[in-house]
Image (cartoon, rainbow, N blue to C red):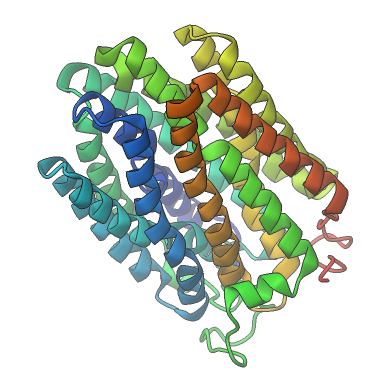
Length: 416
């Protein structure tokens, strides 16, 4: 039985999304700047080590979703993962060699794979499908607010203490997320609803043999189309911010991390209202037109970046990431919930799509890094813009609307 989103439940969920924001996204562009400006790595090596590390996290996505579907100890899983991320952030600057950096990031990537499905499952298990769209929008708003605050702190501290401060900040956020997780009342989570079932005995017991995430995805045509669109979104998006950070760092090495923080804060401040708006309108406007806007804005970003190397221009264009990423973050679990309602495979389906999308993101950094070395930053941005355009066309032509025709319980969404 779903609970009302009372302060007893809402505030811990808000805090959990806020503090996990920086942790679940990883070091990302900050790591790229640290390796470029402090350790003097070249762009291709940075792209390779980030991709190798990301692959480990990608491989973990589907098992992480299956684990969240199966376990009734969702809070304990989140806490264990946060501990691993904390340790990884603390030790990384001590041994900045290629193998150690790749290994450490791989381990934290595996741990971080549980955060997104766990947060979505805990939320669905607490509020139920009727209130899921609005609550997931609120989750994303607090997630982006947390990213904005963390990026502001990182930029300010890095100005005085250097890029290494980012590692300590992430560790502090991970510790705070542990306390926030403990504040979420475990008895408020319906473990059957959390996995996409209609409710019933709250023992989380399996119903039949658990299929693989890819089996679920491949037997559901709309889910497969959505997965392909998500892969292209991540391929086009993943390398853009690191490339912008590298350009800013090359122009001013002393302020590279601070300027990166400005980029992130600007985008995150846009994401907060976008996520709230999506949460409140997705049941009215439908999912398809809103997600199409995210892909269109992503393509536009790729076309605009090469027009100028001016720091103000690059930061201004980066604010558009707030529109695309804000929409994607709020709609992704919602569309998956639409297409898996009543199956009990909500989280493993999230994991399977996230795995495929992660492969796209990992390839993005490799392709972008090699393109920069061979043809420059302008060519890399244009390639990414083209991929986003292909994703937009695919989505508009093949993806059906998944909004339930009957408000609330997901009736009549396309399943095949």
